[in-house]
Length: 114
Image 1 (cartoon, one colour):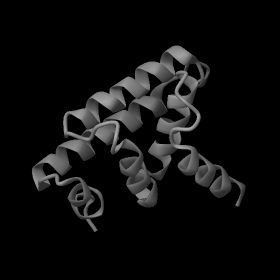
Image 2: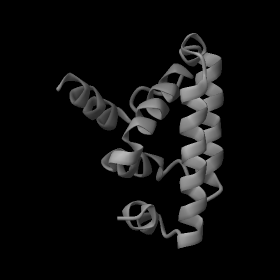
Image 3: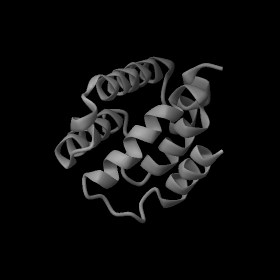
């Protein structure tokens, strides 16, 4: 199943928009993976990383009211599950409200214990 079918269609994205969003998500994931481990855990890095994620999704009209649903869709896809495990903790490390993404975060923790 393509990214457009798995994620894009739920957010009314065209195939071209889905492809652009997917490219942006892959670049975001690579940026996180290439960062030094001691840098990744800093609030400054987390804040910049989450801001880049926000900028990316806003370009496709995915606003704060839909970001949790978007991340849940991504987490449900095997390809983007790891990326979500970078995004949500970055949001928290940057000082984000712990109630946001709470259910998704608990699911992530449960999946790690298996």
